[in-house]
Image (cartoon, rainbow, N blue to C red; front, top):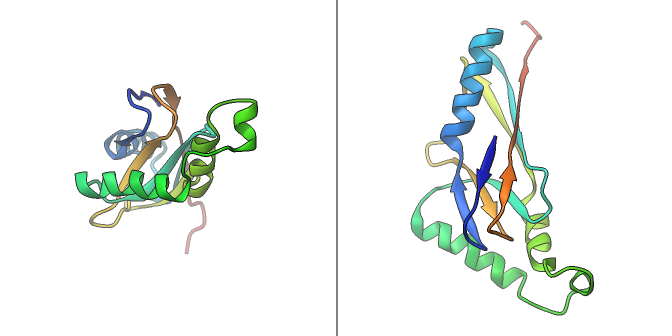
Length: 136
C-alpha cells in the first residue's frame, strides 16, 4: 500500500486501508485465525497502535520532539535527517495484529497510525497476512 505525506511531521490513520487489505486476503484464503503484520521499509517514519484523537496526535509529535530535539548529531554531517531517524527508532517500523473470526482485533481506541517524521514523501506500507494452520 502506498501513501503520500504532505508535512514534515504527520500522523495518518491507515486502519481502514489495512482492514480492507486483510479482508481481501481473509476471503481469498478462507482465513479465520491468524496474524497481520504491518511494516514500513523506512528509517525516518514509524508505525504505532494508538488513539486517533487530534489532541493526542499533537502530543505524540510534541513528546517525540522533546525526546529527540534538533541537535548536532553525527548523522547530520552526512545527511540532514538524524532527528527523524532517531524518533523512528523509538517508534518502531512494524506492528503485529491478531486476526480472529476473519477480522483484525484492535482495542476500542486503537488505530493503526503511520507517523511521518521526514516528509513530505511518498511512502510504502507492507501488509502480510499469515494464516494460523494449527488446529485445536
